[in-house]
Length: 151
Ligand SMILES: [Fe+2]
Image (cartoon, rainbow, N blue to C red):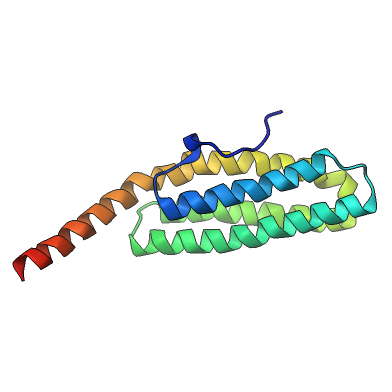
């Protein structure tokens, strides 16, 4: 099974988002790593639980920030994008509930889900809005230059 790792193929060429996605990948990889070496002891599941909480907290912050950018640029597929974020949060929250009841039973499925969702979301959803945002930024720059040129 492939291990989560950032490489340049995940870049969407929007520096703030690339930075966030890289960090997202790093903390998801930490979750994966802890799960891979667990010996099914309570303290192992405690650290998996903490790593999971980090992933959730970061995901909420990052999605919020990203959606604000998409709103401000009037991205036409905002709702679709937002739905994909919501699906992730909902699913991971459900896993988290099950995890608190029986961590041994769900930790592998949980990690598999995160590992599958994150690279796919970056490559199919985030990279989809990137050209649109770049064009919007370009037009805003041209407008600013035009204003400066006229004054
Ligand atoms: Fe996204």
